[in-house]
Image (cartoon, rainbow, N blue to C red; front, side, top):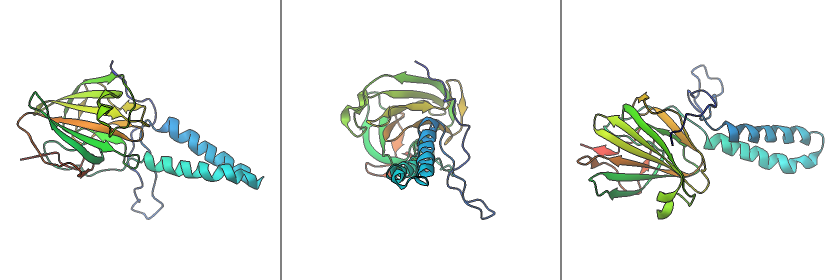
Length: 229
């Protein structure tokens, strides 16, 4: 079932970036985070205001403010200097597994913890040929059974042929937000979607393309090269 991009906030320009004039850095959150972020901040602001009238409200204001700060961190979306290579990582995280597939492809699974940036990027330049939602469960993304979780399957028409990428929801991440539709041309490293909170992203390298990362290696979306010459 095709999915339309999120109607929420406009494309971000950076996060925690310090302006050249020395002013305080501007905080930008990822598209698709608004339904979580705005209510949390509103609650923090309200309980903080009520604390001025009655100190007992501090019992609610302190955790609300802490949760708001956590949301700000979880949904940050920093600018990146795009790396070089034929295939670059679509996700921040740690390489969980590297598996040879029966059709000759190699699957690289990247686990994203709640502390990672959750915005995913295009691994190659090309045209999005399909964006398909597949219903499923919500076991932790590091579990082997997470292959059956709810996911969004992407296909890109690239210079290497068809490239498949899969965004997999985890135990907490129960909403995947694509930013682009099928038919869209994307640049390498361009933002294409968001998985809220911890999750996993799989990239399938075509047959004949050698893996350039190893299990346990940290990756940065739009920067880390997944293949090698």
